[in-house]
Length: 151
Length: 111
Image (cartoon, rainbow over all chains, first blue to last red; front, top):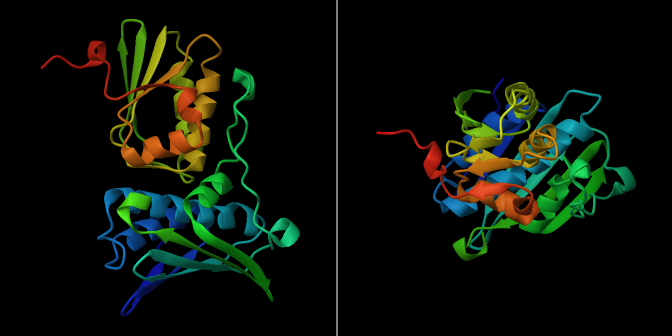
């Protein structure tokens, strides 16, 4: 286990990990500690880690549901946001688009939702979400605002 | 997944010792918790102040544990970090649980 994190000065970083939930966890730890990100407020760090975790675990659970493979994460920072680009060689998204991420309804006790929150969180907490299939690759990109007031 | 369980009268108090409940640990968390809450009690309190990170899989696992309690007992949560609290609030799951800012007075260890 363990990915490769490389810094791409002056304002970027690149992470390559195997598509498993444990590698996602370790990759997030490495990325959250890199100089590009670690100075964010605790709230912004939490939001960034959450959106990224949801996006990466979706790749593990869906795109690579039947395969193993790698996930590449590139991040660039500008004054307003962290911009993430995630690439994998797994299955394309159904309908060639990310799920709408509607919040599951809170109904009767026995019907309380145990899933379906991931895309809701991504869409609620990210900016300018974009997805496209390019050859054999899925390319997902989104921004996370780094202004404390927005986190 | 490291959990510490304490029985105080009619209350089961469970402390999460890990610093995250995420996609890598959610299933194990759910299974361990189901074993623990299978014992009868009037209240179940989950102390989460060590947990700095909870993702949608972790949230789903906490909801599953609540459902395992049955319709009479509600899962009580304590010590949510701001990031964890935000996940509950955004998904409106904060309305489903009893959420304490910190461990209820009755459950604090003397000294």
